[in-house]
Length: 305
Image (tube, rainbow, N blue to C red; front, side, top):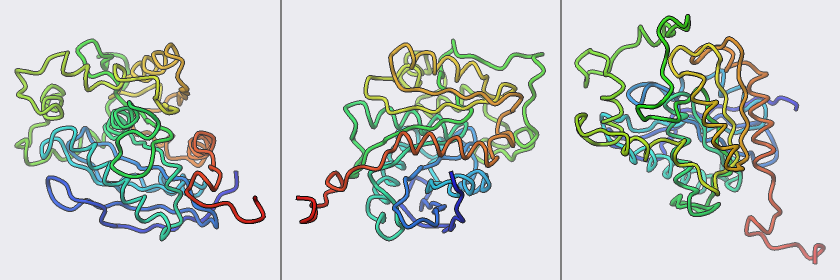
């Protein structure tokens, strides 16, 4: 696959959230043909993070022909789920409304993200496709694929958890990150973050609620093609999360691909290489085939009749 020189457009308003205006950065391939689109959600434990924190990853994807719309979204201390699903619906509507201006193909859209963003992309993509290929997107578009990087797919008490003494370490950028003021400078426990995600008091959180919010328990027959990538040395989200999710999808007869990056930690540099971008782009190109012109609402030309 040949690489292209992307164009990057930053700070485009696409909607509003609980804390104010939401913006996206668009990494657009320099191609004469409308590009497939990956709506991408950054990581940050649902409470922090920036849409432009992994520019090399997003730039490399665009260089391999995938337009990337990296979006802001509501943090869970500002709004519980499904606020983030509604953010994604707004992003889908923005793509539909602006496809012509930015040379995007609104019929070839995937959702994706890393860590907490991978979780939100996956659960939202599953919910949007439960009733069929088009789902309830709020826009005249459909989700054709889901890409999840080092993601937690099971939130229940039975979920795979980091094992003390395994030798896998939490990356320094996480241990040194600033805690949002909402939490008074004390990093919130996973249970507190999960309660905020679910919109319930922490003492009312239970496995029934968490299973309902767990992608591994929300897979269904209409699930679009899945690409699951994880590092084998992840000290934050155990690789078993992705292995178990992939195994469940396989048992259900779904199209799911698992790629493990040997020795990679959470948000490791291995996820930012041109080779990784090429792999993701190849998956998306296959999962999001160009549709005949009549499926875009275009009338056949006289010569086609």
